[in-house]
Image 1 (cartoon, rainbow, N blue to C red):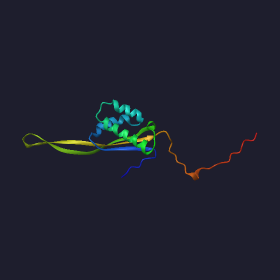
Image 2 (spheres, helix red, strand yellow):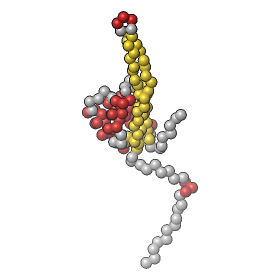
Image 3 (cartoon, helix red, strand yellow):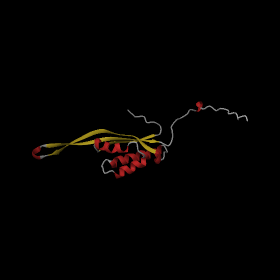
Image 4 (cartoon, one colour):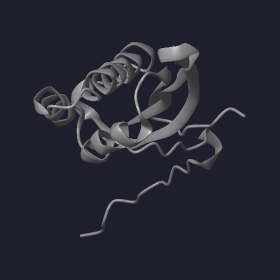
Length: 139
């Protein structure tokens, strides 16, 4: 099922990112609702490994907005940021005496939605516009 986004919203989707969803949510919660420039500063300073893939996704979404919809990067805010669990890759590590130990590699899917705050997207149909003749005041 494809998600429908509103006019003025641009998104970037990162799938199968080799990162725990819980650790990615810790960073996503800090940037949700902030401006694009402020988000870049926060992600550059935070000491978590999850910051780098999220920084790449935010900059990718901003590049989509500027290239596809001609929106300035300074007018963008992060309207929605969500992290979902991805697939778990399982492999076996050999141990002593022919035994094995399972290793789980967790992944996550991250969605970043940027919104343009410079304009109101209210579209008026041409037939809805009414032109009135205004009479000059009598003095």
